[in-house]
Amino acid sequence: TQLLEQSPQFLSIQEGENLTVYCNSSSVFSSLQWYRQEPGEGPVLLVTVVTGGEVKKLKRLTFQFGDARKDSSLHITAAQPGDTGLYLCAGARGNYQLIWGAGTKLIIKP
Amino acid sequence: ETGVTQTPRHLVMGMTNKKSLKCEQHLGHNAMYWYKQSAKKPLELMFVYSLEERVENNSVPSRFSPECPNSSHLFLHLHTLQPEDSALYLCASSQDRTSGLNEQFFGPGTRLTVL
Image (tube, rainbow over the protein chains, first blue to last red):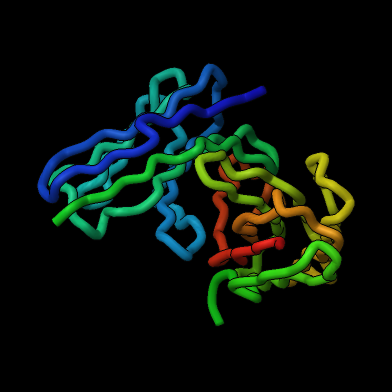
């Protein structure tokens, strides 16, 4: 069974702090996606990383794909209450099925 | 309407009821998906349709029956459900399921409660 393990499962921090969320697997993926899901809504795609070692930035969010394309990280600088949500990673293998992590629930307190 | 829409947003049903969930995508995509989301668990893929043809049924019980009349619409017909079927049911679409990226766009989900 292919697994994507996300850590931590839950994180509650103060506004202005930095944080990193991890997504790890023993499998190689053709690409890896990060989504954010807010209560009462479906996941929204934030970014797709494709190349090993790739780094993408989205304002205060930095996404990195591991060199071997088995793992990824999401780093948030100076977290804001608007960053609160469930962060999901999903790995693609070139077919219709994405392998999903269980998510990191992030709460940013004002 | 834009993106992916789902109705109803909330549904409470008894175990003997029959109901249907509806999904519509306005993105011109070729593939549509049904997922089940339960707390603290990864998204569970239930069904995939590509160009209206079902390409995956991930060992889903027969009490869930999908229907895809065209590439923009997807239904999930429910009958004789169990309380453990209570969850958020998400519909998604993607441009091309075989592109290697398979970036998916989700609807807001239907929160289903089975009594």
